[in-house]
Every structure is written in C-alpha cells, then in structure tokens.
Image 1 (cartoon, rainbow, N blue to C red):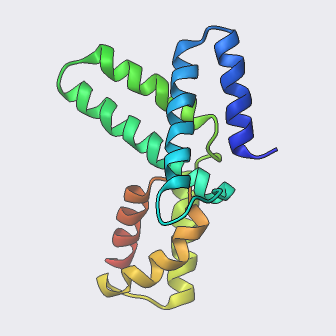
Image 2 (cartoon, helix red, strand yellow):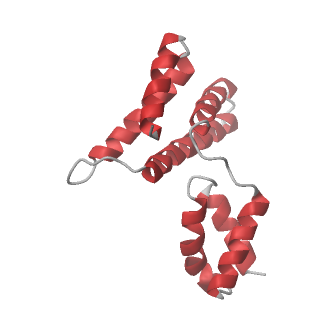
Length: 150
C-alpha cells in the first residue's frame, strides 16, 4: 500500500475518531498532493519520493509558521502549527541526525574532491538524493558550506 493510500485510510480513521487536528492536517496534505498531481501540462500520479517531497514542503511550512507565530507572541497559533507538523512528521521517513548528515557530506566531498565555496554545487548534487525527506535542506546546505570552508 502506497503512502497516499495510507494517508487516505488514516483520514477515514481520524474522522471516525473525531480527531480534528489529524483529519484537518491529512486533508490539507492530500490536497497538496492532488494539486501537485494536476499541476503542469497533464495530470499524473506522484511517485513515493515525490509525495515525500510534498510532505517535507508542508512540514517546513508548518515549522516556519510556528516560528513566525512564536516571534509574534501568538503561542496559541504556534501550538496549532506545531501540532500539524507532528502529524505530517508521522508520514515522513525518520530524520537523520546531524552526525549522519555530516558523514554523508564528508563522503560526498571525498568523492568529488570539492574544496571551497565553488564546490558547493557538486557536493549538493550528490548529497541531495541521499537526504531527500530525511533532513531540512537549509540545515544541510549550512553544513556543506561549513565543511567546504574548513
């Protein structure tokens, strides 16, 4: 059973159990997936990797919104965004630790022989597929910059 089917099944369960946060969040995620499927010249079915990309994007939106609400002193709204983020996280692959990310980066630097800021693109090209959906892109980018500037 694919990720989209799992989400649809869990939506039904959340509605039955009257879990409004979970059902609302899953509805939004399924809408984002459907929008992605029908965008472009022709409709298509997303692969599991593409669905994970959509989930990652939605999780990032929730994280950024929670930070913005927190900064604005709206703890109630920040808590809502954080709760939605936790629901989305249930469907994402396990996140990599900073040490695991650094190891992947070190391997990529060794493989490409990249050095200095000019090698950033080469390293990211190798690192990105390995961390897709398992780590925040901004964090990885910062760690690559730090590793290349040493």
